[in-house]
Length: 44
Length: 447
Image 1 (cartoon, rainbow over the protein chains, first blue to last red):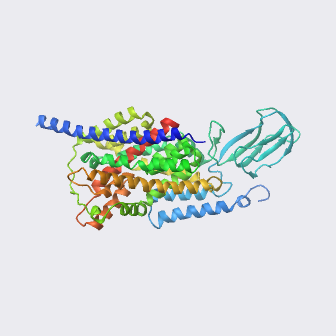
Image 2 (cartoon, rainbow over the protein chains, first blue to last red):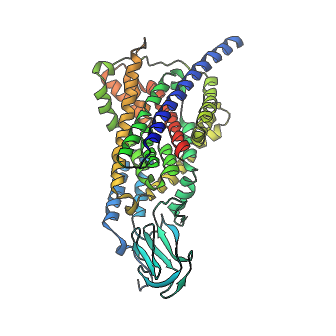
Image 3 (tube, each protein chain N blue to C red):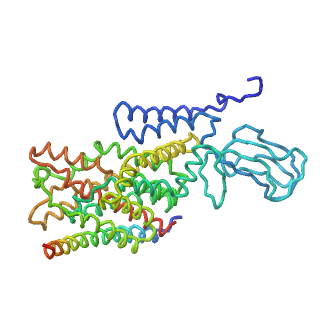
């Protein structure tokens, strides 16, 4: 018999974690852009 | 021949014939229709080879031992003969010694009226079955079974293929438009939707995870997760994943058309993305590795290899490593991987109701992943000033770069001025990262 509580935890937690991590990466990508642009400006 | 050479004819079954036909169909799709030829051709040939009896390419050796002491009263299966799972191989006065797997007898180690102790080897069995090594330990003795055991079960080939894919991947379009990462995340809904459907169909949690991950549309991820969690269904999940990747041009358009209006499909997106600097491209794999592996340590082999391969490409200082990973190395790995996967599809392992169910669940997983991407893109459009074409959400299903190409073709049909390829590449590569994370979560909890 499959443990449905565990199944819900895996699916709910897993999907939420994928979303949170990719959102975090999206934010770091934006942050990297801002920082690298500033570095380029300072260098110039 | 003169009683010295045993041919395969007497062991050839209708199941073998059907599997050879399936192998030939895959070879036809590869050669005639040019559908994923690098994958389907060797898989198809591998299927043919393992379904020619007595070839032994996918054989594992298993030592059948007596559970209780006793005296052998009868030998039920002769040397060289095949038998089904749970068949009694010998009878003793204390009960039958049955084989927990199907196979054929390589060598009988006992004779009638011989006394055996508990733990004595009764027979050496050859089988093509993928077993749980903790319960039924086997030794690979065939060429393909060695590829499979040491390449896939030791988790060497899938991460290395991911390294090569990293070297082939340009994250530029995704870095230029980071909100496309969310579309790649949304597409992972398909993984969890199919996971639940598989549970309702009677699969165990590890099996359901391996079936769900098909929706990630990344062959190495699917193989990696299945090898860790449910190796006995790896043939079905791998074939489902690679076949549906080839069938993306047939699966995606109806899903997209069902969820979007003609007007939405014609939404124009500027063809030029902002220019991404080299520094950003170098920082991305470094940050991704640190962030993702800290949160999901079990994704380390896949994400780590994917990102180091990408760093080879973007750093510009290891041209030789990057070129090797993009060309000969990935080709060599593909040969080992695909032949081993084809080898898992012997008739006795593959022709089961379970396999058919896995194939059906796999296509549902793909379609629901694409649907989730499109729906999120539509939701994002409610808040965005500059609208995105919702079709690019379907590319979150990964299957790089096929799904992005499908979106490009559909976009051109609706609006001649639209060039969606680079926009679709963002969710496309984000989907690959998302699938690796989802796989890491499954392994972390169930592995």
